[in-house]
Length: 338
Image (cartoon, rainbow, N blue to C red; front, side, top):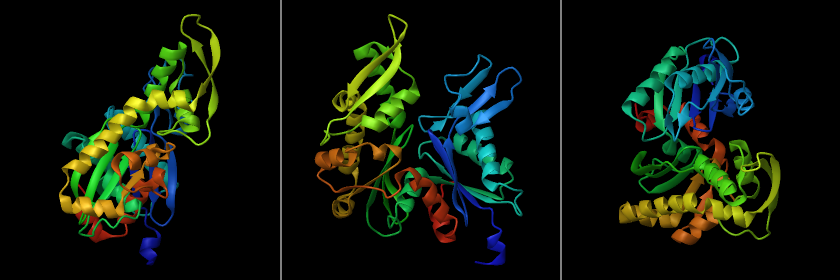
């Protein structure tokens, strides 16, 4: 490493619907926080960003509004997204940078040109010398260790908070790509609606996510799981506690999981036969937080007949891939989508 590169401040960012991760060249992952901004509507000031803002969800006075700038994989609030990005970049540096950094930002593949421009402009406003955008499935494939530059098919299924991105990659290009707006948040919402419908119980989004993580599954478990859930009874208006089982949660998740599985099957039907043979040999790789849902790999394996593997670090695949591109200029020019 040269003396100059030792002082490099280049960073890679996974701008996710649920979480934003930041990778600093030479230091690795330096930040992983929820993609949430808390505004004071009285004076227009930002009260908190990231973890601090998440802790405010459901607990704020009327003049404090906690918002998620990203929705369904795209930017829903441009102003909040820009302020969040600036906050995270400055926090990741931890000091005044010795030179203007390069930024690589992972973005959903189906965002519009206007949204791409907005993301790039936000990067330049934090004094970046260059801003490069890379599609998240490509970054996830690189971060998962797939040989994306080989003339062979690699299939990646990235289940994030807002979207499930499915891509077949060969020779550093995307042969097939699709974004399905059914992912982690849709699973949480399905649980919320099930609790309301079945138990007449109102729960918050954090409770729904906790249920999903603790006892959620895509296929039957070897050992049954149960959980105590607290919420507000809709008709009586008072706190109530109910016990739910993994079978009930699986029933709640049935429809969004069916859509994800069908999207994977559709992808396999639409790719060239030569690439299909490659994927049959190499298998399908799952990344993103949704890949951690119990038995999802087994469900996809049963439905497709293909080997299905979960990436070694599914939550960080995108930012690790974007970070590795920082050190490979030839790959950078092949995979960026500016």
